[in-house]
Image 1: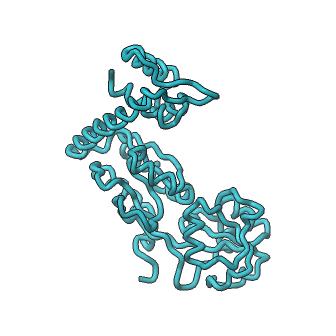
Image 2: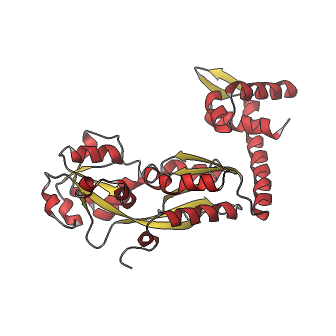
Image 3: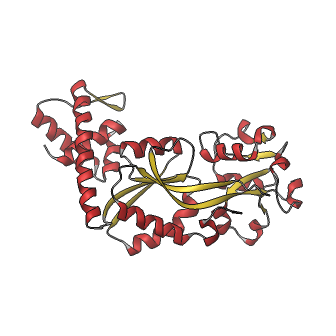
Length: 304
């Protein structure tokens, strides 16, 4: 029995598919399957059964997987503790990030970080806040970049920057003539918004008191910020974009951006880790790289 085999068992038990588990572990599916079969032969039991296209643990397999998960976590903790003592940043590091942050932030710091520290095996995955929190808690993610919300007291949070929300207004909309947008201006406006599963949606509803505004969700419940920007450019309503998104706009697109009047809707973007996270050298490097990549005015709250 090896630690690697136990890692594969944990991955299959969580993901319930050999292909996904192999991708998560960074190996081919035949390799992962062969290692698990070898472990089953050694133990003289069957750990998993295939049923209706899914992988289901047997009763003893589930008990083994639970103990394997604790063993893998302890072994990872030992490796992390030693790496941090040596101030090493090499090795695998799994980072989650919100889809409303990733396309605007990652290009600013990730290519340079990877080029400067090729020894760091950084794996980045986009996830919603509702998925990020349990992933960090369970150790599936080492850290995550997301917006600070109430109820995150169990985690360690390091402030990266403060990001304003901006309005992106169609040229045919009455608000296009406004220099700044007040939250009261949004009543009866047609808004292209992400669904309620995104914290971006919840923050804007809270900040801007959007109950009276007409939402696109009746007709378009899916989508992305970029999709909604194209809708607005096509002549329909308005949407909201994060401040970093404006850095990627053309001059023509910038003409459609309107800041909010005070109080400005703002989110605090943080690096989240578990409270017992020990790889301080890596988290410190991430924080430094990200803070150096954003405009200086975003390092402090607006109008304070």
